[in-house]
Length: 190
View 1 (cartoon, one colour):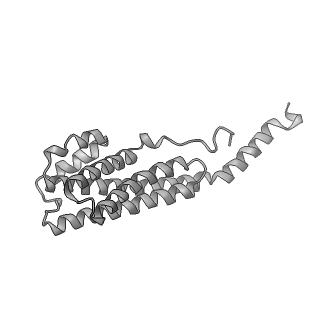
View 2 (cartoon, one colour):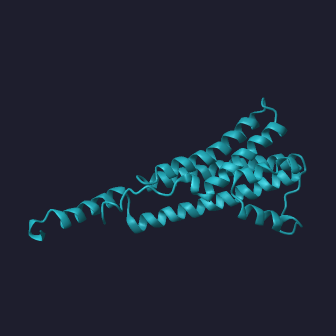
View 3 (cartoon, helix red, strand yellow):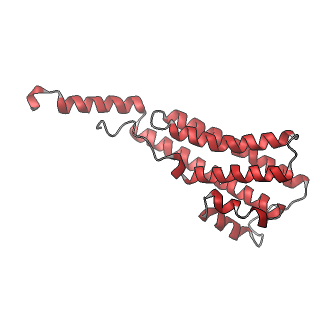
């Protein structure tokens, strides 16, 4: 392993689709709360913090990724847990207001799924806010959250696989140091 190969920064979190979706979830939740939940209601803060935690833990996990696979996995797991919490809040909102949850047999389910799979940019989703009723808005949120949770599960699996293949930072540093010594410090090789 060369010195260039270990502790290399990973792709910026901003380029990750999972981050982009989590940012859209945060922004949409913020707008949803402004219109639907009183600021004095504990749910307002709980939902906003869950949406924020989902996004921010992706940021922190990716930022720590070069030096700690363990921290990256842990923080992606925290993001996933926060999104599950937010999902449950939306499900509670829908259940208590008799808002239907679109299942695979719903006429608009497939098109919503396709839209959420092909769009990650928060600006796209926020442009739709004024055009949606509660049922559409909540089902959009459920779909985005489910997709983001699934993406986080795949990211965690990828980090685990990479760790098994390449080891952690200490192992990579040790291999790089040995490689450097073997290639640069042996006076007989010069």
